[in-house]
Image (cartoon, rainbow, N blue to C red; front, side, top):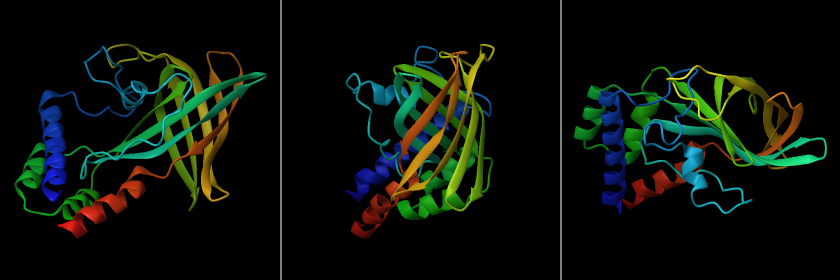
Length: 229
């Protein structure tokens, strides 16, 4: 089991190394995830959408390969309400920490455990890039100009501009709306409340059931692998 998990992590790091050389890696600040068809890759929301029945909101995103510098920091499912209209809404925000190719090679050549590799990546100081998207009913909108603040220990405010679907770095960004939310504990869980303006149709009231941060959900998995080793 330890061999399989470690091999999965190493394959993931090799993919990152390839993207570093190919120049098609992570989105830069102000960019949105590329839609399928532009570069053959699918966004996180699109991948989950492939096996999702109509009208069904998917569960929390699965854990990424262990050790990768990607963390889904905010994800939630719920509704956007405008007058008598009710629409399903999904939010996904990722934090990415790009790694230098030489640093990736060093990790690949090391004999460190999964937990040790994870800790070293987390301790590595570098620029963090945020990217995200919302999905209103069946339409995916990239989020740009993401702004995250923590006014208190357990509360986060999120504000972003909403770009038109299908936006790519080769096209001029067209802003079609904005979202403003507060994420805070509520009755043993996390709730996201706020407003969404989109396509000049008015102001939607947003209510989302937020999932725990991916790193927290995956922590037990990593610890269990380390114990079995």
